Length: 116
Figure (cartoon, rainbow, N blue to C red):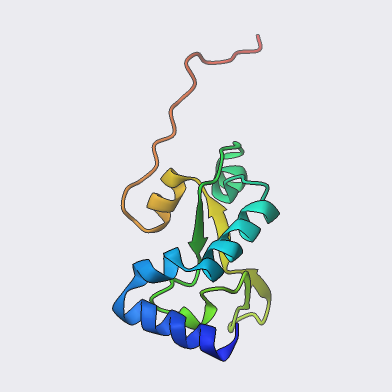
């Protein structure tokens, strides 16, 4: 991120987050993240071993807490010094769960599979 991008993201985080999400620079980064993840929800894929279409890009380091990382796909974890994803593609349900708005309900299979 350039210094002017950092200043703009910080201002948006403090005053008007919706302006950030309508900003052309964010929309370009968002599109890039979705393309890298092949428009697949990364949480469904790793946690539930299911493939669902991703329609949201989630900030692992929340935007309001870390506006300096708002456009960064990766960050260095200060505890482990490892490179980690900061922006990940999620479906709507997983994004809601990530923010604690609601828990995801996984439906059990309609019938129990048996191999007798």
